[in-house]
Image (cartoon, rainbow, N blue to C red; front, top):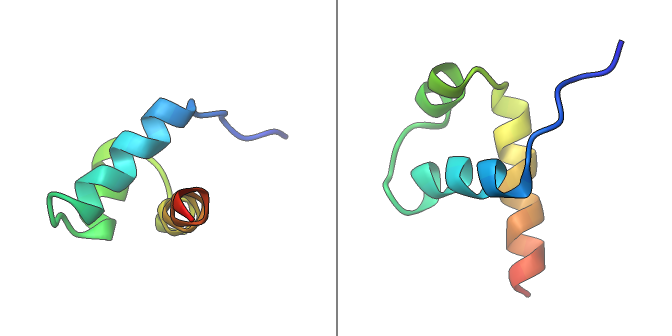
Length: 51
């Protein structure tokens, strides 16, 4: 079974809630219906793109 595919914009906005607005990873994950593991992965990927 394949998981849900999220757009890059969705991922960026989700990570922004953590990095810029200071929200807790677990809270954002629960609110958006994604796993904390996904959020940490997205944050890492976005950080690598900025380099």
